[in-house]
Image (tube, rainbow, N blue to C red):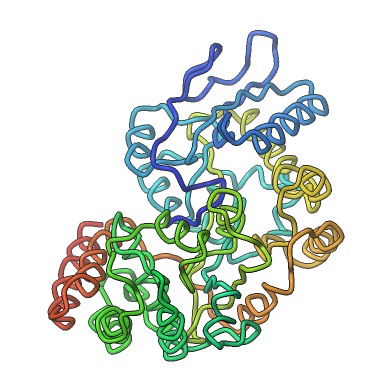
Amino acid sequence: MRSTGFRRSLIALSVCSLALTACGGSGGDSANGKTRITVNCMPPKSAKVDRRFFEEDVASFEKQNPDIDVVTHDAFPCQDPKTFDAKLAGGQMEDVFYTYFTDAQHVVDINQAADLTPYLKELKSYHTLQKQLRDIYTVDGKVYGIPRTGYSMGLIYNRRLFEKAGLDPDKPPTTWKEVRAAAKKIAALGGGTVGYADYSAQNQGGWHFTAELYSQGGNVVSPDGKKATIDTPEARAVLRNLHDMRWSDDSMGSKQLLIINDAQQMMGSGKLGMYLAAPDNLPILVKQNGGSYKNLAIAPMPGGKGTLLGGDGYMFNKKDSPAQIRAGLKWLDHMFLTPGKGFLGDYARAKKNDAPVGLPEPRLFTGAADAKDQQVKKANANVPVANYQSFLDGNRKLEMKIEPPHAQQIYSVLDGAVSAVLTKKDADIDKLLDDASDKIDNILARG
């Protein structure tokens, strides 16, 4: 599903149009003899700083590689699930195109991805990337994509509200029982304060249900991907906890059917104690919703057993020429995959432009590359990194689990179960899970 940073938080996809090219593949060589590649996920003009950084990095790449012409398409979010398949089917996808982790298998299954395996030696950074992330784009031993970022879910909380409620902000909840107790104390502050918020609409309720189920040690589908595994004690515990916090404790507020923007507005305004999210929510809470880095912290996923792993990367159009594939891999190295440099890694530039540096994710690299990336990040940190230490420490003990196959369809089903327990006091949890299990089985059976 979505995290909320540069890659996914608005609800409309920009129409790809540039004076020189259409949305789809460019066909190889441009008129001046250069290899031309079209790429997407350029920040929109409204994100002025990110847009400038992106343009600077593309310009520096072209200067270093005068035989390559990069044509950028802006789109925010970088991928709209409602139009993604249509662009693929219509041959309108860029030469190098953005994907969620959950897209990889599907794009390969419908034969729309180029096989990058013969060209991996062209990507200097490939073996420095976390294997778990690389494997997401590996299907039947062949590599079809390159990860760009990775995130894991945690518990974002308001340190100021913790203090006002008599809670220790340096000791955030580590179990769902502790979350429930803390939420009740925070809600008791009154004045419209909500202790804990959760999503329950637009597939986001199903996304969070999955994360919460992972935290309890459960799974949404069986290891072979053929059967639902939600009619379980762990899944019942997830829905029972939400139901009781909503109706017995009154710690989740009366307004339900929330989506991510709702929780962000509540947290940024100082009216929410806790909600589940990834670290890339933090700058949005500050820049767009009036929050303060000083008051915001993130802890590991409660439950202590697992957390949801997500992220994004780039795949290549099956029509790409070998020259385009080589050019695209060089572009990815330059833009995103060199520690301490590029669009995501130039921490000195980010700090100079008052962008947040020191957030605990993404953690893309391993070994010496990771050490260098963290060293440069630490040297330029301008946010209270101590507020994120428990998240970093706790994540080392959790199993990182990728989203289930057919995630968006499954999340739509699970939305119904989550919304029911949050809007109906007499919701039948057993029946909700039984019905959802049957629907997920049907989704999996259709492939």
